[in-house]
Structure formats: structure tokens, C-alpha cells
Amino acid sequence: MPQTANSLELDEALAAAGDLVERIRLIRAAIAGRIAFSTSLGLEDQAVLHAISAAQADIDVFTLDTGRHFPETLETIAASEARYGLTIRLVAPDTSEVQALTNRDGVLGFRNSIEARKACCDIRKVRPLNRALAGASGWITGLRRDQAASRTTIPFVVFDPAGVVFKLNPVADWSLSRLEAFIGEYGVPVNPLHARGYPSIGCATCTRAIKPGEDIRAGRWWWEQEADAAFAQKECGLHVASEARP
Image (cartoon, rainbow, N blue to C red):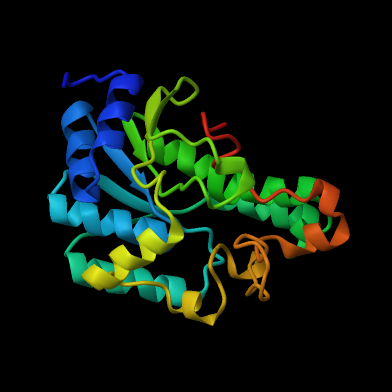
């Protein structure tokens, strides 16, 4: 496969490869330059991290340090670094932008409206992500098609013209049961909050445990759904569509 693969060829190659480690190797072989993996330390991302380590792939691993993580998330970072002998780079938001936002909206002002919440996500997540991906050729994510209704058509690979980067989703076709089986088989470190009813974990101020029967992302920005289910949006702006990032 050429060093600058087209997205269709690489997508087909990843679909044909059943093994996650082999998918990571295919990605590394197909794309020249820096490949970055943005991890949220969720189950999917921990499986991908394990595969990156097993493949001994030269991939830049980072996480967005919003300043509002659960302590358990920070513990998962430390446990993962110790297990795999690598560094998970912390990418923080611009302090002046955070200060201006909190001065304008208040400490919990993101709960006042969807627009205010998206502004917070933009400063704490989207802008830092854009900076971290600057100059990269590829961007690996842990997106899966059955995570949410907005993600059902996620491809393995898509070229993102906005970021001039290949967006790579190596577990796009995995079911939750397959993911959990992989984690159990290899003893992958996971955030202890998952066992306490948190299937999707973001900032501590914006995440609650879900109730029996709720969607797996119901605990994210839950006040929006409770206020008006018709306008509830379960994306922070990092993955507003399966085809590209903003």
C-alpha cells in the first residue's frame, strides 16, 4: 500500500483486517508523517492504546486536559502509562480563553444553554484538539458506530479537508460486547467509573451515571435532555459528523 494511501483503499484494507493490532500496523504503514491518537481514556480508546503498544507503532498519543477531569480519569492515565511504558501527552486549553469564558458565563455557565455549553467545549476541547493535530497526517479515534445515533455511518477512514488529515476509526465496526471481550482478554486498564454506571465519561461537571435502560450517552450534558429532548445534542464538537471534524 502506498505511503500516502487514499481513504477508500485504506478503509477497505482495515475492514478486511479483523485484528486490531493489524489495523494499527496498516494505518502506520499507509500514512506518512505524524499520526496522532486523541484518547479520552474510555473503553474504546483504551483498546486502541493497547493495540498501539502491541504494534509498537510510532504514534503520538495525547489527551485533552480540560481541567475538569474526574480523579479516576487521571488515575487511568497514570495506570496506562505504567502498563504500556509510554507517555500520554496532556493538551490543555489556552488559559486566557478559559478565563475570559468563565468571566463571561460563570463557573457553571455552560448549563445555561446549549450555546454556552458548546462555547465551553470549543475552548476546552475543540481548539486544543486543532492545535494538537496541526501538522499531523493522521488522526486516530475510538469512535464506534453503535455509540450513538449520530455515529452509525462512521467509516474506518475519511479524509478531513478542514484539518488536511486522515481521520481513522479502527474500532468503527466493533460492538460493545466485542470491545468488552478484548479488554477482558488482554487485561486492558479501564477507568473505574465504568463499573459505577458511567459508560461515557467526559468532564466531571458534565457527566453523571446513567439509569437502567438509558442510552449510553444519556449521562453526558444530561440537563439539556431534561430541559428539551427535541434539542438535546450529545456531541461536544470534536465529532460533529462522522465524515469530518469542524
